[in-house]
Image (tube, rainbow, N blue to C red; front, side, top):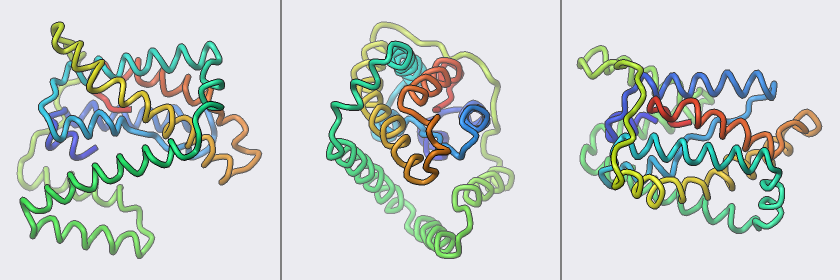
Length: 226
């Protein structure tokens, strides 16, 4: 999320507000701490290549529309039965390695800051503190001290021309859809069932597809990454 703002040029306001709104929404719907899955595949592409903001917004809308169709029609249940566990594990491993390589490249550009951040992260994990919240607070403090850009205005992102449509579909929406279906829908339902048992009966792939699709349709046009 922070990398999407600092390196991808996204406005921090829509990104943070989008996550906050989706967290509140999922909490009200499921009454459980269902993880909010950002569009990691889109962010990964954005970090290694120049991607227009309009393409990211359009890709989010397209992914949301497909998820809504799959959830409303019930086709998502058929897809879940066709996806083997090895595919889910492989996608997670590949994405994790890609993000790790990006992180190492960024650390190599500023080894002092990168090493310090890694040390703080490991210390937080070892102590049990919420690392994401602490780093978010540190980032906000750094922004206040060094005068980094503020939240910016909340406005609809212009989609752009035909070239943007091609990038949105080919480079962003298709890989993100594969990851969303396996990670944010299938794997999330499995993890919640393992962790909460019968309390997670409502966290089904179909409902996850519907809520994720609705969040993408409502938030992606404003530059969020739900």
